[in-house]
Image 1 (cartoon, rainbow, N blue to C red):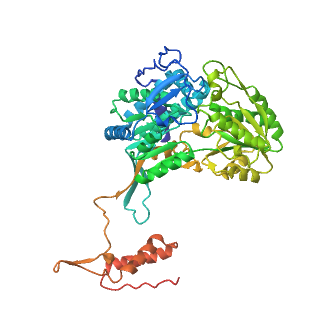
Image 2 (tube, rainbow, N blue to C red):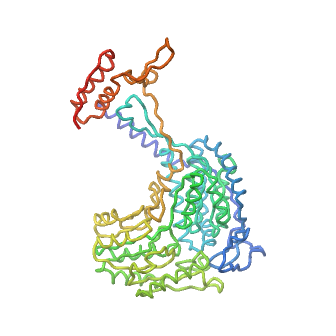
Image 3 (cartoon, helix red, strand yellow):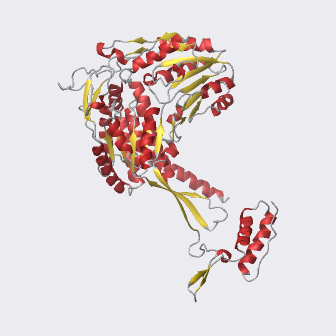
Length: 607
């Protein structure tokens, strides 16, 4: 019988065993999270049953409370304390104490923590999406796409590959250190700080938390003042899951407040992750510089969406509208600049006009609306000013969507989906981050022109390129300055959680997500040790040793007369380009080592 038959049988048996093991459900405990006070159809107390109208023209930051309300209805949700710098430092200290214990936890325990979270998320999708919808105004479908799917994908990636990328990684030792073993180790940094935005409150909390906790860190997260109500509920889920695996209290904390709270966090932690505007990101950097705290900045975006003449127009039109209107256009990596080849410009506009014309915006939990509210107070006025600027400079509105039944007090929280045509780069809409449901469409003639247009922006987060030729799309995307590129798709990168996410220029630097983001939560330590200890040790060659006189008890300098010649021979032996020169130099090295009494001369090469 051929020798490889037993190997085939063993491999088949192993595969069968793995398959049978997959059929056995993992033992994952359920957690109980009190949600009685966040259900939209629960009993409203007298205190929070009224319409809340935030004061216009001034910030809440003079208050000691973070007031929360539903953007879609202006219904009051409650308030949370704005923590002082002293309180923030106390929270970080508690997390630091807990982290020292958690750093010793096994990956088995950390994976169980992830499984508990995953089980809860899958079983409570509606609750999680409803809370996000109430606090930010997005539809339930938008919440499912941006909150649930992305978070579940990150958890399953960490379960599958997380430990692999945090284990010590062997590296080559090079020629001079062949007798050494080299590796990179990944140790927890300590306490990670994160300041996250409001647009996806569930995922924005879970994204940095999952990476930080799985890599052995503690984390303190400052949630946005515009999404504190949902953030504090989501924190309960994390607390319950940590308690279920016996993790120390205060390992993870969620804090509320304004700028003062965030500034205190930056100066207290071992690494800072910030997701938000470019202006605030620069302030984060200045504050972090005082303590040399490393930072990851994921800032604004003005992503280019490029459609070549050989693309499937009807298909791309559907993707383009989704890329514009997802979460009412309030996406870090949203499509904000559309470049369409002149040959299909009219056809594309006709297709998107039909789609957008049928879109209606309204309170997401009170009817079947395609698009929800604008989260930030007065942001609709900013969006309209961008549209007005474009109109003043020659642009035209091709179509606008409609409104459903809006509450009288919430009218200003909505903005109709808008398609602008005949735009150019002299208009603010093509320069400034809109963060809203506006689709400005500009035509181009050649690939070289569209590449130049796409790069003509201070932002450089992502891009999407559509073409019937995948090679052509890849060629265009490769020349666009950005950190994220999708070929014949939009924003699919973020669902591939093994990939890093981040941009360049005014879109920030550093990466979260993926292998790079996970390891960014670590102290990366290089380690070298003897391969054959104690048989072979590193010794300083005699020609470059300082001799030592026992009689006089002192070192005798200089080193050997031929020390430099020895070094020359050693360098050529190790790194010479010609094998014969290396062999000749090796003979010289051996002569130096064996015959210290005589001077070994080497002919110097002319340079």
